[in-house]
Amino acid sequence: MNAPVDSGPPLRGSASSPKNVLLGVTGGIAAYKTPDLVRRLTARGCTVQVVLSRGASRFVTPTTLQAVSGRRVRDDLWDDAAEDAMGHIELARWADVVLVAPATAHFLGALAAGLAGDLLQTLCLATAAPIVVAPAMNRQMWASAAVQSNCRVLTERGVRILGPAAGEQACGEHGMGRMMEPADIVDALLERRDGPLAGLKVLITAGPTREPIDPVRYITNRSSGKMGFAVAAAARAAGADVTLISGPVSLATPAGVRRIDVETAEDMYREVHRAVPGTDIFIACAAVSDYRPQTVAKEKIKRTESDMRLELVRSPDTLASVTALPNPPFTVGFAAETHDVEKHALEKLERKRVDMIAANLVGPTCGFDRETNALTVYWRGGRQHFGESTKCELAGRLIALVAERYRAERGSGTPAASRGQKPRR
Ligand code: C5P
Image 1 (cartoon, rainbow, N blue to C red):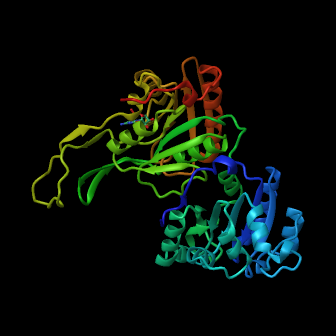
Image 2: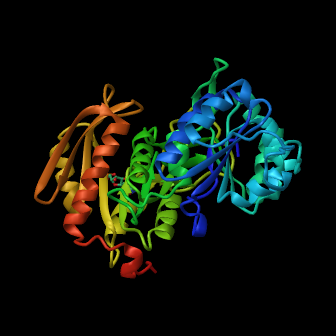
Image 3: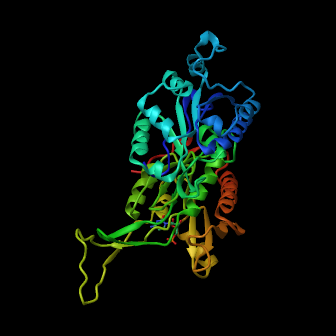
């Protein structure tokens, strides 16, 4: 639970595009971002009713929130102006979704304990609408056993937790605990019906795999997972339903993305084949180990004076196995090369029978563990070079190109789910 979470996909059913958003704001420094959050929600067609906790107005003024939401901000359980003087019931019934951002440690505790200490806590008990919280607090507070236990209770009860994100904190520390950015909260809350990948299922692999030698040692590949995570965020921003299968990395899950964590190449193979039925586009960004130790020692191997030999066996090639399916999704592979990038990329395009391959040069000064990269993308009959820029920007351009090629090659772009794609046996 200490890992960043988005504990669920965008709201489904009647609440898939909630119109009436009850925004609870509690007393954390991130409350200063809530006018932007309100503005973004209203721009997407929502009506926003703000309810403040006692501490919140120390960080953001009711006047500002009233101006951006166009509605009187509520903060009092004892509100004579409310219909029947029962503001909590009236608001609880009005809401299609209750979003609490930022949600402080105190508020999460009160919600988990079922307290009714103020208007916001009381209406959370009284509402039948889904509750979504975006925690924000100091990293030690977030990591504390009490907060983690409260979050587990809330998740079990169906409360959806967005974030927190990692980064610089207001207290000067660095770590997990920042409120997810308003744009990401809005994307996670509302399903996009537009965007070049709207209605399509995209499956992405990212990060390295780890092949154990014994309980304390493993073989791995150099990969931070940054590119794959950026591609997942870009696909989600383009409106896709995204599943991300990741090896061990220390990165926050992009908002609205379903994440499955794996360790070995075999785990990755198994989870990809579990997720691939119904997938429209498969993008393999992971740096998968090609070999694994033939046997894994149960106990730590002791050092001796002599040399040691490891017997390695081939791991399954996930990407090649997906393109070999009877009715494969549109597939995009990655080729990280230290030399002859074009030659190896074109060879891989054919050998792995992928629809597109994104190639980049890797080495001590480029590719790995950096914020920037450059890519050349090849497909049968075309190529496009994207010069050096941030992995986020590159991912956005790559996704736009993938959407274009997908439409060109798969015609109408009818989603796999409606084409009746057969699961692999
Ligand atoms: O052959 P090479 O490993 O360079 O191919 C790279 C592409 O194949 C990447 O897209 C990578 O994610 C994928 N791959 C895979 N399973 C493997 C090895 C590579 O999916 N075992």
